[in-house]
Amino acid sequence: MKNKIFFVLSLLFGLMFINAGLNKFFYYMPMPEQLPEKMQKAMAAFTEIGWIMPLVGAVEALGGLLIIIPKTRAVGALMILPIMVGIVLTNIVQDTSGLPFALVLSAILILIMFQNKEKYSALFE
Image (cartoon, rainbow, N blue to C red; front, side, top):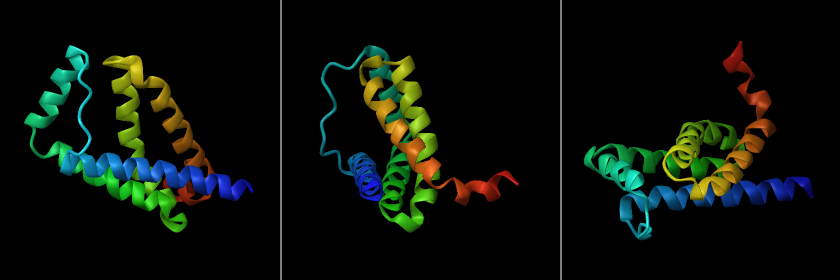
C-alpha cells in the first residue's frame, strides 16, 4: 500500500512538472491577471532573456518524466531540486500566495529524495 501511495505521489508530481515545462513552450495556460508588480517585472525579465524559459521548461518536463519512471526517479529529483528551490524562494520573496502549494511540492520532492537516498551516497564520498 505504501508503495502505491508513493507511486501516485510521484506520478502526480511528475505530471505537474511536465505540464509546467510544456507550458513554457506552448503557452496554453494563461498567466493570472492579478500578479503583483514585482512578479510581473521578474517574469518580464525572464522573458527578455530568450533562452532561460525554454531551458527551465525543458528541465521541468524531462525531470517530471524521469520522476514518473521508478528507475530514474533519483535523477529526476536532482534535476527538479534547483527549480523547486527557485519556486520556493520566489514565493517567499515575490508573492506569498503560492507558498503553501510550493511547500507541499517541496515536501513531496524531499520524500522522493529520501526514498532514493542510497542512490545519492556516491555524491557524498
